[in-house]
Image 1 (cartoon, rainbow, N blue to C red):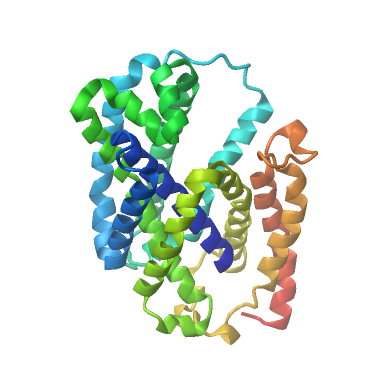
Image 2 (image 1 turned 60 degrees about the vertical axis):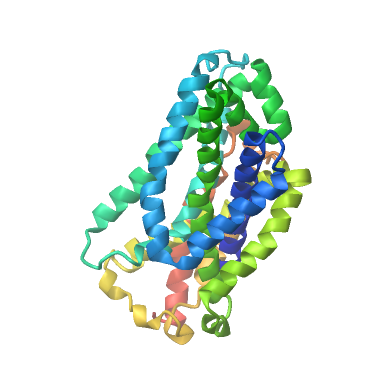
Length: 357
């Protein structure tokens, strides 16, 4: 699980670096290359995550305000072109389901990161309050930006300046082209938009550093900040190369490997509600680093693994479309979620017979 979580975080982190770096390059009209932009974005994010949770929390607490204002301005300046959409065939049930799968692949992996941040909440804080804040913090930005992104993407081929910007700098070029009529102020707003990825990237780097510590017991003795630096050193050249040759492939790969998170959610939820009776007192946090006092994990691995085998025919991705998905659209996440939960019950029951923990 830790390795899968590391890969997911690292991959999405690289995507953030490339997007932010290309936007900086677009703002400078090429005087700053995407390579330099990636380095700038990565180092700033590393510094934010390096300092620790308290600083990261305060950064996330206020940075979204500037991001929101920048997005509103960009939409206002370039909004007159949004109605100039490319003609598309009527949406079918399968394409709608597949689009839902793409969104799930982007959002569900957060479930594996949530505890890295919620652990700092006061124990007496209402669980419903934490849920409401988390759900609202994901739902409203994602829905709003997905709709806006779809509108911008649909108009880009029909707006010459947007199309040119996309061809040169991908997403960053489009945002720069949208803000071009605003002159110098538009460039400033575009810079703010390029920096907006730092929030996601810094949080990802923070989680990655914690995941490294969980790979092996001896790694707990290594300071978290060390892994922050290691990831950044590795991620910068990978991001630079991704921007040049395999960015689209990386995005497709990330959507493909994100299916594991659906099984993870299913197993955790089933354990909590079915086997622990939704009672937090039935967990002993002092045992977190004592394997002999924890479940073996075989039931979880078995449930997710078997479910994934049955999920593959239901996948619909750029690189592969399963036989079932050709008819239904991408229902891989739904199948993984349901099957993993159903399979975990008997497998966990057997596991409890051998280790009643």
